[in-house]
Image (cartoon, rainbow, N blue to C red; front, side):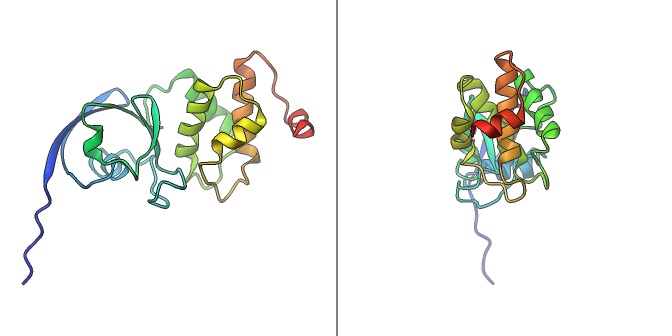
Length: 175
């Protein structure tokens, strides 16, 4: 009989959405698996598991990362933000509302990663135009919406931040 392979573990302490988690985790476990399996946070999805689709996008110390490419052990001592936060920032709340308003989600599989990528854009590039939004969001795949509604939702939040009144018809005419 083959003997079970002993996988080394490591104790980690992370702050996730303002809550401290201390867990023993296998050194080879990816951050997305850790969030889902060890912390019960199911928002980050596993799509391609190659860092291409963006469904696993979360933020570590304010930087977006692909959770399928980061080992959980690398997050030890760091601050992780996922879409499941109990107290979303005003920008994340605005994005969530805009995704609903503009029907920017359908099956919802990509939505948490899309929201985290969009939040990063809204915070880092408040001056982004429609083309910049498309380019920024191109790293996250969606098989359902065709991206137009997602781009509309993000543009609406950016426009509202600037004090404007977003109009899809005007945006489409300009595109």
